[in-house]
Structure formats: structure tokens, C-alpha cells
Length: 440
Image (cartoon, rainbow, N blue to C red; front, top):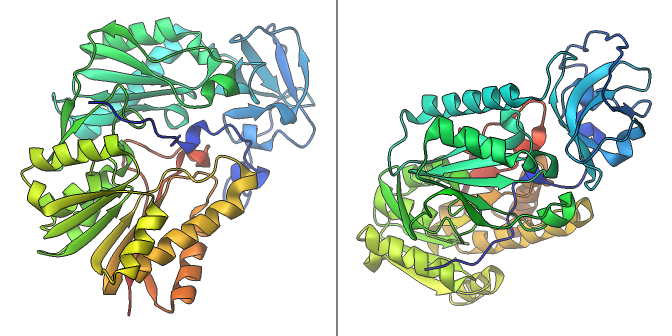
């Protein structure tokens, strides 16, 4: 059983530079960093342009090419460099990549911490300990995000744990050059049965990175691999499935949907993939019927298998088709639902596409509202990191005005707790999930 790849990439790996307003905290909310003095450093130095250093003093980890005034020395790809302001004030230490628009990824903000084996080991220990606080000792059917790139201080490394297997994504060439070390540390600390490397669409070109999906340690993961989440069983394909096989970030949002669904209600799950939201609605919420819609027949095959795995196949039916077209057909047929879930893939990776993405979200949500009974539930999501929460909520206001139906946001949610947001890198809070009540 195989699944189609999906072009959904976490915002934490976006390759476009954020606007200065999105990464430079207001001095009204944060204490201004204490003055730093010029220091003499023996390693290559990246000199930041005048008036461009503030985000990095506030520990944003991405130094884009446009912020660099000059490079002192000739750092090789992956080499450790010091980043300093135009007046010589030390900012931090990072790894250099001349092939990427993110020229430097920063990992330390003092001039005495080298980016050595001990630092990577310590960061991994901290991230693993944080997940153990959430999940306890990992069981054979536990799935979680173990390492979350910038949020865990290891920009460019994502590790998901599915039972006894690790799925690793490297989105930084400089960090990928240390992959043997990282794989060894993961093996020593977690003793998985196997480590499988997954690659993301576009990363090779963006980072000058030549890697491919492959087994890097131990045994290949089974296909399907079985996990359990809030009492629901899932069979997933971590080798070819979307993302690393499952949308772990939506874990708690699936449980939230189940709390709002009432016994016997009718639910529409659009972009259902492997059936996550729909199964939560039936198994945990008691929905009487769920219609799952997805364009991928391979994804629907997995969803059907998961419905049978949970003994609810007779209550979960599926339709293959493009979301906009299926929603239009359902509306024309006079169909009505008690709850509609929208979890589309990323709609834009570039700022130039932001306006068009918001139009797409508007159309999608407007069509969903048309299918809801008065007082119905709309669970609508966006994983487009360039779409802010304010943008998304304003879009919903426009939908309410256009439809002539009031929309109340009863919960405004994000990713599960194993996908924490770094206050220094707002891009790590890419997921928006609004639980809405739609009036008549």
C-alpha cells in the first residue's frame, strides 16, 4: 500500500524571508537586549547590514542573503561562522550555506559556545525530555514529533517517532553535512529499530542539498505501521505517505472535533487523507455518518482501511474528487451536514501568492458554510505559514458577510503540544485551526 506525496511543507522550513515586522518583536513587548561589545573572533564572520540586525539580536535563527553586508573570510558550505552587526557587535554563531537564501542558520548567541558534538547532543536531550513529559515512555504505538527544527533549537532537523521507528527530515544542507553524527546520536539516545530519511519537495533546490529517501539505520519500517491516538487506531505508510506518514500536528484538534460532535450527527471531512478527523468524529464523537473527500485514491484507500480497522466502515463513506467541485455538487444536491471539516494543503509558499491563497480559503469556507445546518460546526484549518491568524480570521469575517450567516469562533487552536512555538521564530506557529459555530 503506497500513498501519493503531498506538497504540504511546514512553515518552519519556508524558504522565503519573513517581513521585518514578523520577526522583530516590538520594544513595547520585550526588553531591549543589553548592549554588546565588539569581540575579536578567529573564525569567518558574517557582517550584517546597518539597521538589519535587530531580528537576530532577538534570536531569530534565519539570516537571509539580503541582510548580509559582507563576508569576512571564505567559509565553506556547512562551516561554523560568527554573525556580527555592522559595528562589530557579536550576535551569534551559525552554520553557513552559500547555496541557500538562508545563508546562515543560527544556533548559539554567545561567543563562547562552539557548535560542536556536545551542543547537538544537548539539544537532542532537551527535546526528547520535553516529549517524554508529554507522552511518558514511548510505547510501540505512540506517534509524536520528537524534534521540531527551530522550536527545539536545531534549525533544519525534524524527527518524528512512530512507535519504534524514527522518520528524519533534513531541511538544511549545513546540518545535513552532520547527518552521520545526528543519526548516531539518535540511535544512542533512543535505540530505534530503524531510522528512515524523508525528503521534502523543493528542499534540494532551495538548499543545494542532494539527498533522497532511504533507510539510514536498522530495519525498514513496516507498511502499514500501526499507531493509536486518543483511542483511534491508524495504519499509516511512513515511507511514502504525506509528510512523514500522518498529520501529527492535528492530534488534539481531531480530539476537539470529537467533543463537539453529537451522537448520530452527519459530518463532512474534506481533504480527509487517511481519515483522521472523520474517524475521531465517529469513534470518539459518535457521529452517525461521515463523508470523506480527497483527490488522492491512495489516500482514500488508507482511510477505508482505517475505517475497517476501527469497525466503522459502514458509517464512513468516501468520494474521490477535487474539493471545490465536490462541495459545489453537494450544495446543488441540497445536502446538509451538522459539521464540516476543512484541512487543505498549503495554499501558498510565496508572499506573491498570499492574496490568491486568501481568495481560495474564502471560496472553500463559503462553500462549506452553504452545506451547514443552522447552528452547525465548521472546523477550518490553514497550514500556510504566510497566512497569519489575523488574515485567516478576517477571511472568515468576509465569509460570514458574504453568506449572510453569523460565524462565532468558539476555539482558536494551533498545533499539538509536541509542535511548540518558539517565541524567537513565529514561523513555527504555522497551523491555524478555528472551531466555529455557524448561525442560520
